[in-house]
Amino acid sequence: MRLLMQHMNDIADMRDVAVHAAKRAGALLRDSFGGRREISYKGEINLVTEMDRLSEKTIVSEISSAFPGHSIVAEEGANIENGSGYLWVIDPLDGTTNYAHGYPQFAVSIGLEYAGNIVLGIVYDPLREELFTAMRGNGAQLNGTTISVSRTSDLIRSLLATGFPYDRANCKENNLDYFNAMIMVSQEIRRNGSAALDLCNVAAGRLDGYWELKLRPWDVAAGSLIVREAGGTVSDLSGQRFSIRDELIIASNGFIHQQIIDALRRTGDSEPSTK
Ligand code: IPD
Ligand code: CA
Ligand code: CA
Image 1 (cartoon, rainbow, N blue to C red):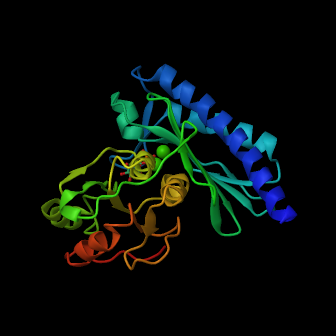
Image 2 (tube, rainbow, N blue to C red):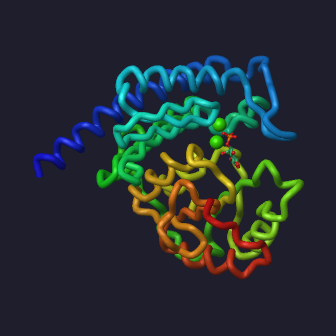
């Protein structure tokens, strides 16, 4: 019991550092939002800006100086391997395409994995000043207030979200078949352009469900814990427990989860495998 309490206290200290880092990076993103961007391309439509890199540098330097023994992986290249068992999984700017266009939907996402579980999730939306937090076993909060998923129980009454992979033009597993099927059996589908915020919006009961293919661990590490801690369900296509390294994520309020799985499985898209 004492050990468990100590572990929770340690994670709470880590949360405070991560919140500070997310808010600092978020403020930088907010201050430069709408200005001219230096854009380079990782693929034909997959872009990166100087602000992705500055945000990552800010977060990584705060976390690595507070916890020099911890491992870190972040989207724009930070990769520190240490033996502590703690792995920080960071998306310094989720919603880069939105950000580069001045479209106001983006966030900073910081997850922490320990012994194979995500134990801490922080997502910060600097424009709305919304801070989503979750510690494993401790519920999910928005700006300190507990949040929970919606109670919608029919898919046809559900507001969903999804996204499309950057290789959509060259690969059949591009989510279009899934989208075509789901738009017929749900109330509406949104494509907001930030997986981390889509997950947080499921957690806050603003969306009833969400699915997406080919995301990376930093897109979903924090948000998947926030959904679970808000009482929702996160799984792969078989309904099994989701890993941040899976190729398909389904997150929902739980009530419509099986209906989403059934609808996706009825479509012609080939099923992506676990990486
Ligand atoms: C992207 C966003 C988007 C999702 C993409 C992600 P990025 O992350 O989360 O909503 O559809 O697949 O890669 O590139 O803006 O960090
Ligand atoms: Ca991302
Ligand atoms: Ca990113």
